[in-house]
Length: 380
Ligand SMILES: [Ca+2]
Ligand SMILES: [Ca+2]
Ligand SMILES: [Ca+2]
Image 1: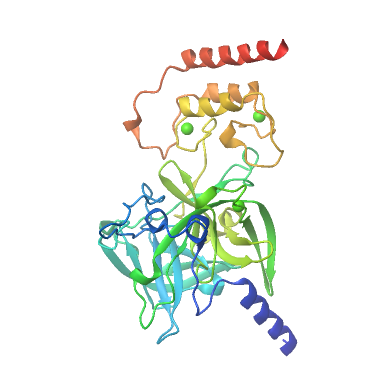
Image 2: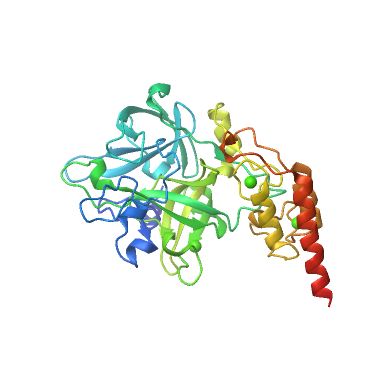
């Protein structure tokens, strides 16, 4: 390889990747622009006297399977992230993978006082572009209550990914010195929506990536809208299926003007991942489950009826509005799909605490009646 080429690669890596010694923090609109709100975005926030009570947007989800490792020594520490997809295998970023033999720490709960467990990075077993599969030296002990996450796997003949909301995990701390601790790195979560897909090339490899912009205000997700910063590389983005998190991205790069961030798009690599990690799980919505909580019920019917008769932009995520056949229009066909699956539950659904599901026939009559009424009104 020529020197010129090497310089180009080094420059590209330096520009795009999120690895640096001078660690910045994930940019979350509500924190950066509207003032410090650690009570909302920091996983391990502990109020002191006079501080606001914790209102973490990630409460109710299990973050225990996102581990933190460190690489370096002296003042040269760098964050390295691990997201478990099976008891022994994890995803991370190739340009920022943890050191072999390094410790990786997991916390069971959303408090630094919750039990923590340390495992050892064993090997890097495969990579596809910047997406990387690694292995711990030993499987996680079930007694340690560390989660591993399924991979989002929408049937793309039914569901588009563009426009889909997700939760991004990163760090809100500053460069720790002399030695890193959880208190310094301060894991945070923010949210965003997938805007576009690109084949991102940093020679010699190309990765299929999802990109998301920073469009708050006036659009976007308000205070929760986030962008990646240096030090977030290799950490995950998740889609929430009810209270379950499913991996959709692994952080890779960020760009300015316009501000946007990019993740390796994990669903694109499912077959490759499963060939190395046969016990990796995937998760998909069932027909009619507009809000992805694993059951087709009155909430989904509400979403559909609120959008009934409308059309959206073809090729964007309209599943949450009730477009179950992906034709960009919410109509009788979708209602038929919902009616046929009403009361169904996904095999991963395990929350019967929600109570009895109302009879579909009654609800269908109510919805059909209101739709008929709105049609009559329109005709006048
Ligand atoms: Ca956005
Ligand atoms: Ca539902
Ligand atoms: Ca439709």
